[in-house]
Image (cartoon, rainbow, N blue to C red; front, side):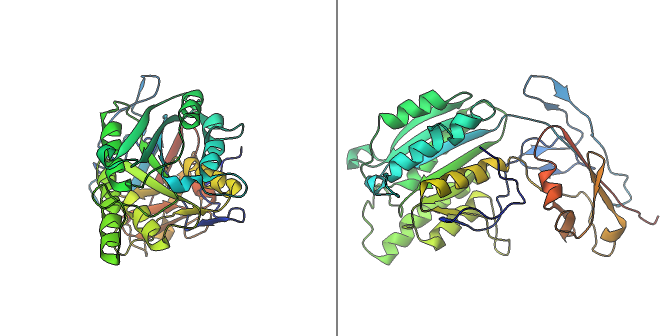
Amino acid sequence: MSMVGCAESCFDDGLAQHGCPEGVSVTVTATATATETEGESASGSATETVDGTVDDTGVGSGDGGGCPMLEEVLLPQVPTFQLVIDQSGSMDEDFGGVSRWEAVEDTLVGPSGVVTELQSSIRFGASLYSNPTPMSCPQVQSLAPQLDARDEISTLLAAEMPGGDTPTGESIEQITSELLADAWEGDKVIVLATDGEPDTCAIPEPMNQGEQDQVRGVAVDAVASAYAEGIRTFVISVGPDVAAEHLQDLANAGVGAQAGDPDAPFYVANDTDSLLAAFEAIVAGLRPCEFTLADPLPAALAPSCGVTVNDSSFPYDDPNGWSVPDEMTLVLQGSACDAIQEGVVSIHLECSCES
């Protein structure tokens, strides 16, 4: 199974992708001055690696003169992906010759499935959610994340069948609590695969627009709360039955996108191949390509600056280089973004500043 890089934004017919996945931060150990990066302080900190060793390379400090600098070292670290799967009755509907449920099962744990291929490098967990009766809402069956989880996830999926409603928001609240209780230090991500509009335990069958807006809001709020706790959420619609507006709201909340920010990606899969492509695209972007600067970098100064990734230079304002969408943000694009996705990576920005 090939991994789709951050620069690739087109997939096979049947998959509608909206934007390029921002990806999941693996480890950021240093910036030029004391700043906050994805979920951790980077002020001269040392970071424990997967094997328990400590790396403090690349730790730098600002020169106090306000000249923009960036020194990042990214280390391999095993991330956690919790696969949150809608188990409602509609998952039994046809999906190109198999049921939606069977398509998800094959996509995850089939011979070429995402979990099958990547289980030794990613901690996978699974959570099935539904509302079979009012007395058991939400019903969430979770398998805790672990390495080499293919057999356990396969057993869980094979033992279950679709049924009940779709209490997405309340289920994500419970799953978020479970992930926060997990002591693993790596990044944690929810991948939500759902085929229908949400409901809630109190409103299992929304009857009007007001109730529909209310239950959608519960789901979006739950995803936003997970992000506030450091857990990103990526969204896949299994089939075309979820409103694009709601998918966009979930996707934006899942990565903390604010008003005025570019919309986050979401995925609509209409067959098994496009469902696999959606999961691959989400899992592939393990490292973000956006970095916060300690000092402003005005547009007029940017052409005088140089950016290197492991000593390879990349051009400014280039689709395969880097850009500054605002004075405090540096973004690697195309080939530059691809270059940081694997292994130990050093990223360096240096500008020619007048005294």
